[in-house]
Image (cartoon, rainbow, N blue to C red):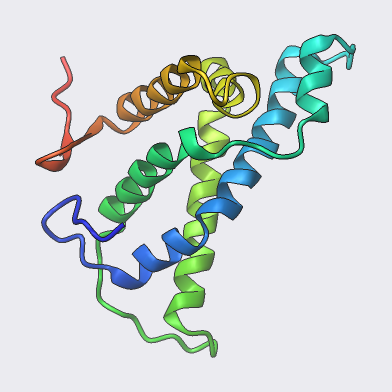
Length: 167
């Protein structure tokens, strides 16, 4: 997470927080997605092979979610680009404040994304159903495309985060 995604991407404390909380937040995201999927697609709680596999799986392959997380973290930093340290009067340090803010922001993004069935399916495909197959990479790409549409931003390899011109 050392590379800059936009010219003023200089909030190094927030970058460190995002890097340190990556696994924890991704696991929480998958757990939340599992619950939302069952709520949306299985409101009666009927058990079939798919639901049993979702419930049975406790360890997830997070590899396909890492690029998604990296982009979402960059978009969060872009939207919260003020890198001036503020005075904190509650006794906490900036690392704690950024941790709390990032976790809340990430949770809000995920709650918003989980309102869309395709996002739920893509996360489950990337982590539970096809974690080591080509389909997982396709699911990961669908998640990134969904995020690009939502924020109207895209991460380019050489240019960093850029706004997408909408028609």
